Image (cartoon, rainbow, N blue to C red; front, side, top):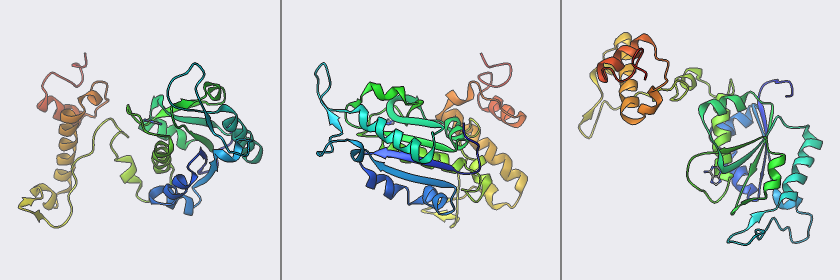
Length: 257
Ligand code: ADE
């Protein structure tokens, strides 16, 4: 892997470059680009087809519905990227067959210096592209029409993990999934909306009470919505105690069976 000197350089390969150009200009990714912490180069796969019709796809060998993205344009664009930018640390194919994107993957990608993202399309990508792909990533168990939105999701998730991109570091380290615990509920002004008021403790000014209330709410939510996260979770003593009260004997130290 190349020496890491701050920031991540992405090369995205797609047949819809406009989509990535647009998405790459907004939100956290747009900001990270402005500050130089992310470099984003978008490549049109059609520029690497080698024929005047700019054909990116063809019918599948063996028959069947749909079209398959051809291998050579991907191989050519990777050659071009490697020649002009150096060999990337990782070549990622976005596909529903990949491993599901998690916080840990985003954190690992943020450590890379240079990542190529291949956006798949149609019925799939010629299997011979897999020879140059270092990993396949999915954003969930559903099929989208292509890898452009997943690539934008990866860009956003990785950008958040690059130090300096999100101004308030605490808001990143407190995010759900940094630890296997969902976030606590948030409220802002006004204190009453349609007869619904903010929990008194948040207006109390007592920081310790607020901290404990938030912790309890996070454990409660995780227990209700994502109990799977708690099975192997390393909880701190306060969380252990809260969980013991909410679900006696079910989780926590000595009860993880
Ligand atoms: N391409 C199509 N569906 C996808 C998914 N769920 N994740 C990543 N890439 C995809």
